[in-house]
Amino acid sequence: MVESKSVGRLAGKTAVITGGTTGIGLEMARHYIAQGARVIITGQNAERVAKAAADLGSEAIGVRADVRSTADLDALAAKAKEAFGTVDIVVANAGMGIFAPIEQIDESLYDTQLDINLKGVFFTVQKLLPLLKSGSSIILTASAVNEKGVATGSIYFASKAAVRSFARSLAAELGPRGIRVNALSPGIVRTPFQDKVDVPKEAMDGFVDMVVAAAPLGREGRTDDIAHAAVYLGSDESSYVTATDLVVDGGYMNV
Ligand SMILES: NC(=O)c1ccc[n+]([C@@H]2O[C@H](COP(=O)([O-])OP(=O)(O)OC[C@H]3O[C@@H](n4cnc5c(N)ncnc54)[C@H](OP(=O)(O)O)[C@@H]3O)[C@@H](O)[C@H]2O)c1
Image (cartoon, rainbow, N blue to C red; front, side, top):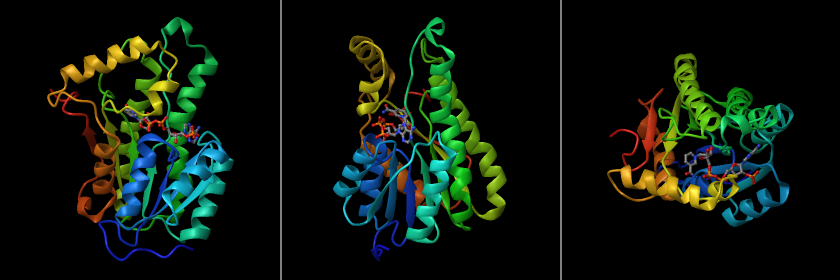
């Protein structure tokens, strides 16, 4: 077991962040550790997980777990119990995007998108729930466009709209146990996410430019913009906040 820091906004807390090998999840892990938390990060690939955990240092543990696999999530929960005993913050963050016209989305692509972004979020919460006591916080990474539609984005944005919906119902269900559930919706943030999306670079850049131009703050988001919000939602500072969607997008969705 790793000793906890005694100072910081998350001092003494334990957290599990799925999809913590790169991008937003990795940045959240950095901030959580800086604020005194001990963190488990996950990803699909053992080498990437080990590298990210090593970069994060002694307060981080890496666990290879594919969120599509309930067996992997059972093993993740067992590891969290062994390492921490209980978990204070669960960030169901792992996700990816498939963008294609409806005619090009076959059953396999559909299942991949929904299995990672939706089934993965649901069973991450279900499997870790036995380790959560009153006062815990669950954060579900959705997306700032979860209330909008975008051509070729049908299955990705449907998955994120459903994640936002999970936050409502799970907050209702777990609130009586003192467990908060919120969605956290990033706007456009440059991470490996965009490189993994199978659309031409110009199309992706055009989409990013369009969103940035429409956002009141007129810039792309940074991973630490999202990580700061995740610190707030994970900390006791947000102890009266549940079922909401904290949109961190420079204002794009709400104007
Ligand atoms: N970047 C944006 O503009 C943006 C905007 C709105 C919402 N989001 C959401 O923010 C979250 C993080 O995205 P990001 O931008 O940080 O992208 P990223 O850099 O590609 O990170 C995605 C993370 O999810 C992990 N992951 C993917 N599939 C997984 C699986 N089946 N099982 C376990 N882990 C898996 C990846 O790990 P491995 O590949 O190493 O397994 C990686 O750690 C996602 O849910 C994404 O939809 C991103």
